[in-house]
Image (tube, rainbow, N blue to C red; front, side, top):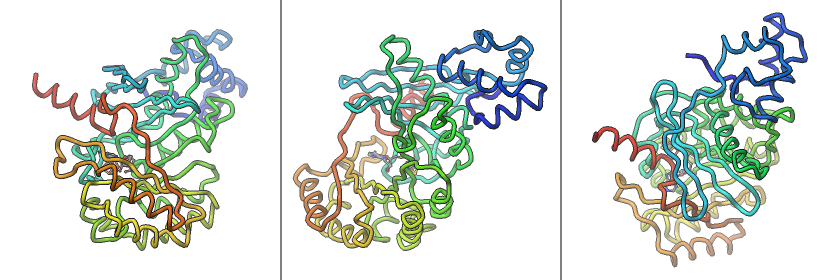
Length: 354
Ligand code: SAH
Ligand code: SF4
């Protein structure tokens, strides 16, 4: 099976071409065809010599994902289910906002972190996606937009699909460098957000990358007892260690960080937890934003339900009163199972049933 050429950074492609006797300028031409003109076959790269085309064809594929399902929601959110070359299924979501088109990408087939509320964690990680398979999700959505003929671009990316991105770090970084590159898709680093369940060594490593990508941390609870109950990763990386790594990130980058907090009815949504959360973030409140996320019900996790609107409001107001920047996430595509991992898990159940 050939790997997708989208997984190579510009520097990696240049090195490959030069090693194989091609001129230096070829890499720029090939990237132009891939990311500006967006062809889907090497043979369509008209000003590239045939020897180079053959070299590319015999080493890489352009498309390795096959679209299995495309569901459109009433609010315009589109969910794509892709089949990879090895038969594994992954999902990608396109959300359209007034500020642009945002794509949510998957980084692993399944997830080993196994958070108690998440559909993606229902299935253990089968494998990591390579960088090309992650970039290809963006390209597929871009090709979908191109087909409309209205010159619309993917402008934002959230790495919040299936998987723990920091458990697939080098592929994640290659993906980020490719989509951010000025010679390619030019998606601004400030328009890209990576979400992690809190792998502290990787938060530190990420702080040292010379790239302005936004970081979001799935916190979901303000104390260890509660956090361990809903996210077992908290045993390995408890809140003190997590906050140390976050402080390091903030000192190193001086960039704002987002804390994600799913509101689970009568579990973590009391005013007491809001107070505790405000205290926890007090010393970094000038660089913090708390994203309150109404829980998206998952059939297999029926011990959880969504918080009552009045409790969401109280939680929000308590944080505000304590000087914490926060907002309640707008929902998109709930009618099409757009919450992470849900479409995939339903499709797998359907396939098993037939
Ligand atoms: N593994 C990473 C990124 C993918 S999950 C992480 O956990 O951060 C992206 C976000 O969706 C996380 O904040 C996660 O906690 C949240 N999420 C998972 N299941 C959800 C559900 N059923 N309803 C609402 N948010 C959910
Ligand atoms: Fe994995 Fe994130 Fe789901 Fe937790 S919330 S199981 S880390 S995908």
